Amino acid sequence: MRPGQGPAEVGPVLGPGLLIGVGLGGFVDGIVLHQLLRWHHMLSARPGADLTANLVADGLFHVAAWLAVVVGVLWLWRRSRLADRPWSWRSLIGPVVAGWGAFNLVEGVIDHHVLRLHHVRPGPDQAAYDIGFLIFGALLVAVGWALTRRPRRGSA
Image 1 (spheres, rainbow, N blue to C red):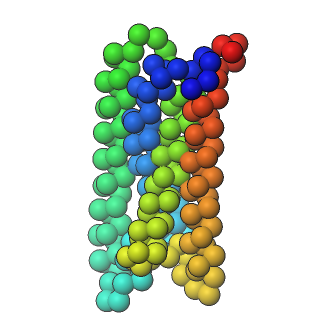
Image 2 (image 1 turned 135 degrees about the vertical axis):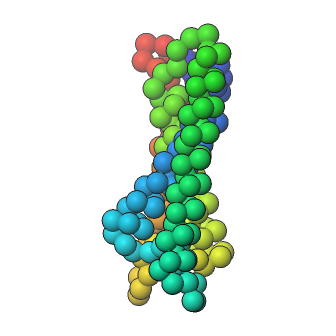
């Protein structure tokens, strides 16, 4: 840790922030890619998966994202009641952004490459979209980590 942002400040919100970020990343994926752009559903690449199966899978995916956010918020609330001093916004936003990136990396590797449930955007350039999704996730993790590690103004 750098001066002005010790473990006492980042530690209490790191886990909750990451979990909230994972859930919010799931919502962005589900709302933007599944619903608004309609590029894919959870089981788009699975033979025999009709629209009903895909919508149920998407719904279960959203339930998991919702639970991650709720558990993260409750965890954060509990930690806030035990805090002996306020946290900087970076100590929460950094882990949230990193959690979103971690969601993209894990979901991208498992669903797009290992299980081959779907691709970000099926078609002739699907590999480029899948790799771009992973690169975006890695960038979010890096930005989140940088925000978390950066000291508060006036504390160095």
